[in-house]
Amino acid sequence: MAKATRKKKVRRAKKASAPKKEGGARKPTITALVIATFESDPETSNADLTKLVQRKFADRAFDLKHASWYRNRFKNKLLPGQKGYVGSDRKAGSSKKKSKKKVSRKKTAKKKKVRRKAKEG
Image (tube, rainbow, N blue to C red; front, side, top):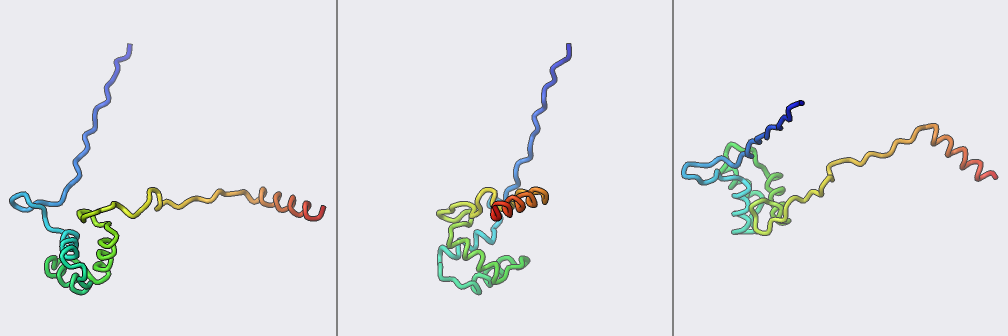
């Protein structure tokens, strides 16, 4: 008789979370700064937000386009960590293109002949 073999359980690595500072606090992020800024003053301009982010995160390439993107995400409650966060704005499978059914040339030629006969007859 053959021995029954057991499948070994595969241990998956845990997802890495944001790096922690000394004392266990999470490292500050641009998203957290944006949320705090807009919650305290929703009328903050994109230029002011850009200056603030560049001051706090000097090594990051943050410009007006990024600020407007963050403002849009904040208005629609799409930033993780924001009050009233509603999740992703993408629908499941929206990134996949629907493939069109390919029809051979012979079949289309036959259909055309049938249509012509139907019109004539």
